[in-house]
Length: 361
Length: 239
Figure 1 (spheres, rainbow over the protein chains, first blue to last red):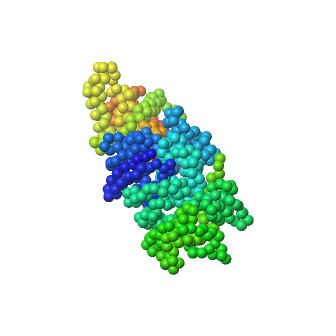
Figure 2: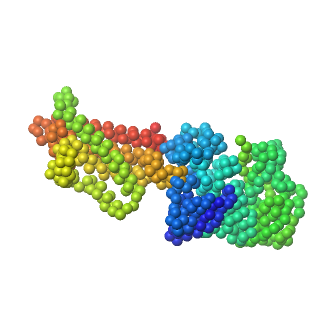
Figure 3: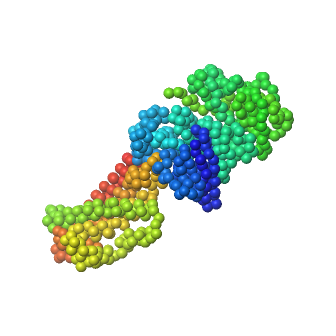
């Protein structure tokens, strides 16, 4: 349980963050310059708030009234920064054990061999940071933070400096850290798909204020949230189950609830969970099932919300889970689609982006 | 001529070993205080910082005779501190090789501080923040992150200090005089020979020797610096 009420004034910019977090993973979402990194730095103790308080599991880490301001090295927060910030003069092993060695024996819950195996960096231990690829660097940075057995892991856009391919090399490890180590996290990003891959629980920060907090699919009924989310690229993330592999035809068949979904071929094991992302504006709507069309996926559902953002309409369709569809206002009128209408959500197999498989160890 | 050119007299050898001894002790003596002051100036803001900064740099801009004279006033047998040292511990530094070390340390100190300060301030602050977030106390952060990363610049500072000490003339001759075997370092010996009617060849020998030592110091510094840079994954193009 984390109780945040922090205020920070920096010139013209004012950050006023108030929320309490109970979820194992919280996605802190917002555009660049919203104050996400500043908030994280204040939680880590690397930046001093102007006033307010920060309570983690009942312990005051900062309180301007009581005059409490715990030094960063005493907060037990693991931070992963956008640039991995590995120590260039130390090899991977020494980087990983830097914080670990500072812990008392009884606090060393996580050990290097386990973390090295989990993050697949065991073969890199003797190397220096400048010999690593971007993705490897971030994995070592993550491992270094995890090895301090933090009570809270702060991830400050850890994937922002990586390209898509490398992102997909890191995300599964974050998921693994979350699922297997059960360390609470705050994940900062302006990419909604990364966040939704890890957690449905988000807090939205805009211009220094938390404008909404809760489950993403409940929040987007709020116009403010929708406008912000839409401006940053709306992605649906679905957690599906792999049913069949069709390597000859280049696709994998998955299920979401009772419906079937064709996705590009993945390497996952049959029966395992595969997460996929679909951009809201890659989905088309139809009032009936269409035969004789190359589009494989036609998920049926009920419209439960329609929001207008500029000239675009954002339609929430319940297909077992919430699916966001972006269409023009004209098409909704032409098709006479409204709240409660039954619609088919159409999208090509190739427009589905599977996240890499997390193969159980 | 060629033989006498390269065979050194006892007096010349004494000047050479004394110079190296004084320069080594001087470098050793200013190493830690130099790093400490450099850190203070690079990282901290406090009242009177610019005054401390100017004071440290003063020997760099004053005629060397002035610091030498001030040292004499302070530490000489009639000086405030000198008198006290003499009476309490029976120590006298004026006109001894230790005095020569003090004189060159004062002159070399600003060079050490300048170089170390630049190196310390150039260490990425976010690396230090990362170390702190991993649980390291600020002193540990300094010793394990800042210092190793600033090492190339600190080494440069130490070599500059060593070289400055080798070349020190004005403050030394004013404070500790020109006593053969005690305070007559290379520059003082060269000066002495040039004042003698038949001293030219000895002066030339010592001048060549000075150049060789200076050159060696620069080469060692370059080698150490490249080694330190390689440790942090930079300067690989020199391999």
